[in-house]
Length: 583
Image (cartoon, rainbow, N blue to C red; front, side):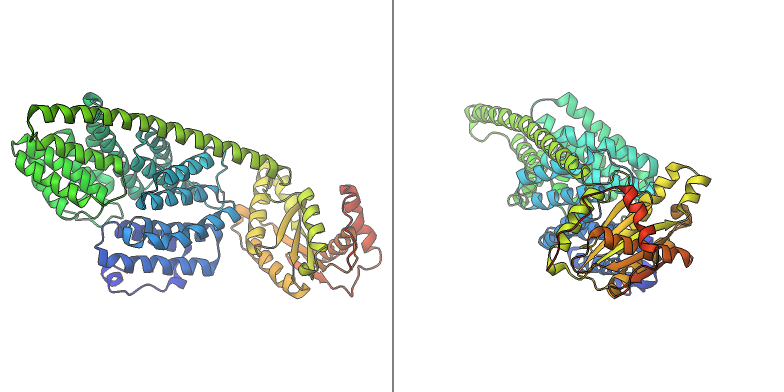
């Protein structure tokens, strides 16, 4: 379907589209909305929301997280829609925490930082950036369910969002480090659009950095930043032609993107840039672009001896930026440029006083910059240590291979559930992998570990948030389903069996599930309930696997089955598996 059809509101049948198409279309809309007229932005945002609704209907956690991220991003790039981002940000944070999607969780914090900057809450935005950086400082294992290229793209997008917050805060040194890290991901897996976004963001960082350096008299260093930004402006031309941004194929990137056009002009101010910058100035949609273009245009006009026109351009931008809360560092660059070109009106004494005031002001602002970097690093370290402490506490209750709760956590949870009548009926299932030994024998234990991780994640995602999936040992898992009658538990577990059976073969290597499920009887111990679940699981095995056997409270294991089932439990050895009696 072409863009004209989409503009007319004729959407494709979403249920017929692939997961990858939904994610890709959301990325396309995010690129379109940043250059769209205000009247079109709400319509594009509504389409992103429809894509999100379809993803939530399908229920795949990673896809839902990516669509939630897009729904937030299209709002935080638009002042008019920013307020509606808050509930979606809360949902994105809760969703990513639940499913352990740490990179997208860090991105949620970065996007909240961008939202806070629109409201002028710089300190709170700095904290969000520190939290996001601390999360990415951890040793994060790539998610095998996403694939290498998608993983790199998500990591790069998250780093770019963090870098954008730091750039707007004026913490250019740290922003530069973050964008350098993003470059490594983009170099490996980035397509033309992500490369374009990265290069434009980096050019913008360097322009802001250069203007900031000029304010403290570091003209040579500023010129180096402008020169590098201009080189990036040249390099972006090829990927920009293939990016998702709406563009005129017959015009250069510098004629269409204000950051790129301004970078070339600031590096070498001259008459050749004036017409281009005038056209860009007329089509600007964001305050930060207005400042950069106004300063670049004024410098070119000044170079040609047209100071009065330059002052008029800066004065217009200054009045339009007066009530803008975002990016005070860049706004101050504009005010300084306006003062510099306006000239003294009160003679030499006034000039001297203004210069002295400016010197004191710059010294204080530079100290604030140092303080801000120190604050960022302190909060980042605090967050890192807090997360490390939390990780240590979690490790005591977490299986290191799958990330699921371990036997100790299962013991505590089962005791709590069994002791509360509100959680009854309580279904207990024992899950065993069919064909797992063959994976280890044919391939390697490393491949076997990958299969366990994939199956654990799939099993967890197929069940309710209130259900608990724990690794019991080897290739066995225990599932607790509080408040679930046996028939409901059996239906939920069927979803898990189907989800594992339909995994791509290169992820599962053909492994399936055999499950036995029982309902906890009054005053029944965990050992006895698990023995019954174990017996049911072996019945599922004998039936060929890839299925479920449920034993109701009225049933019991067949002759000898209870004793056989208790043998592996006894070998596992956990005397704490005795529950208090319930009344």
